[in-house]
Image 1 (spheres, rainbow, N blue to C red):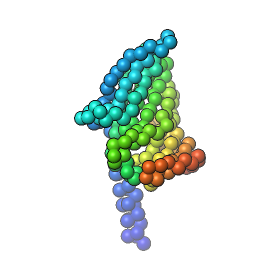
Image 2: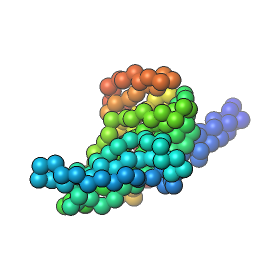
Image 3: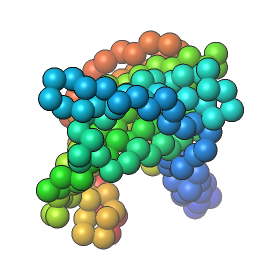
Image 4: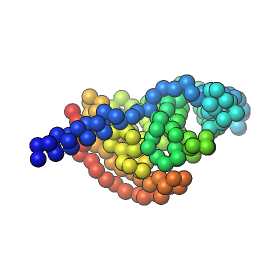
Length: 191
């Protein structure tokens, strides 16, 4: 019995120590900035492309308010443990308003270098904000096998996860989503 408990603790700790997060990358970059005028507001369109091969365009995105625009950050999650998906690109378009505003786009890159987009997420970060909407993938901490979770994460003052509310779950079946609305586990406290 004691050996079984030690084995379970080892497996669980191995899962959490190998949990991956999105990391900054130079593999993809912003290209083709184009300024346009739409009515009274200036917008800028840009492409996310592979750094080594600019013909591999992942997406075209827009900056809707150039006056409030801060930056674009690109991060990467490799080996997300989803069938036929090599990596996931996360693109944050950041704006500085009275609060900090982030528009986040996720692109799953297939074995054949095709791009599959998830619905984008918007978050406002004010002085006392303690929640964030984000996707959690199977290889990440609290991830579920073959499931992409759209979650609302609540943080403690020490910036550790306090609660997790699942807003939506997507079962990944090789090249297709099965969409399930759900609300699930909360009460995670890791102070």
